Image (cartoon, rainbow, N blue to C red; front, side, top):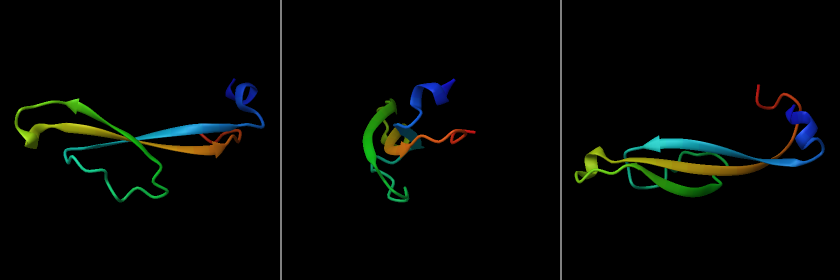
Amino acid sequence: MLDELFADGDIYVITPVWATEAEVPSSQPDSGYWQTLLVKDDPDPEFRTYCYLFAARRPWRYGCFD
């Protein structure tokens, strides 16, 4: 049970955002930009897919991932 692992502690929440643009999306609230992954490499830039990862540290609460 996660509550036993994280009780009274903080956790990191990783949020992925997929896009075809090579720039970090600016619409992410509370940004916390961490890194960019090239998911699909293609010689044509219009067909490349990127995954932008955002990390945020949050206090653990029971049920926060429900």
